Length: 189
Image 1: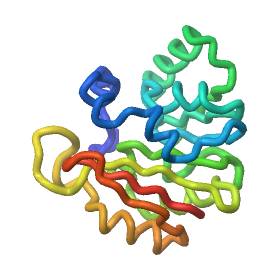
Image 2: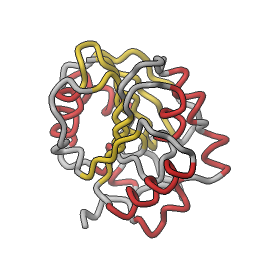
Image 3: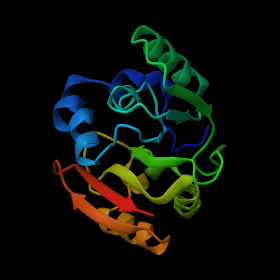
């Protein structure tokens, strides 16, 4: 396993009340301007923190990508329980997304780009699968020491992430800081 990748044994951390309070997925998706017919790629979908609310907010297809079959299995059970029929499961890595070019209107990269090696390859792949003028919602840990989140050396500073998006041909629409620990970047192809 890539040392940067999230350990599926810790999946309970992905959907807890503190995280929902700090980063409510429905609110973030509204700010992301999720449209009723958008096709969406949730990168590192995990247990469905964004997949499930996105599937309820759009009639389009939600592609839930994760490298871990265990995570996708949990997400499949959750979509079945909620009778969500517009979710497709994709096992793979962000550095080589197994999807056709220009497939989705929106991509969600929530706490996952710090795991991508190299980041440049991940951003190229996101750009490749986005339709023209498609948007990416990036949520990450700020690069500063704190007890929660990934190790300091794996984090990407918000200025560096913004620069990386711009270097790969994206326009950064907004950068916000919902807490002193996190940042949210919306970038457009």
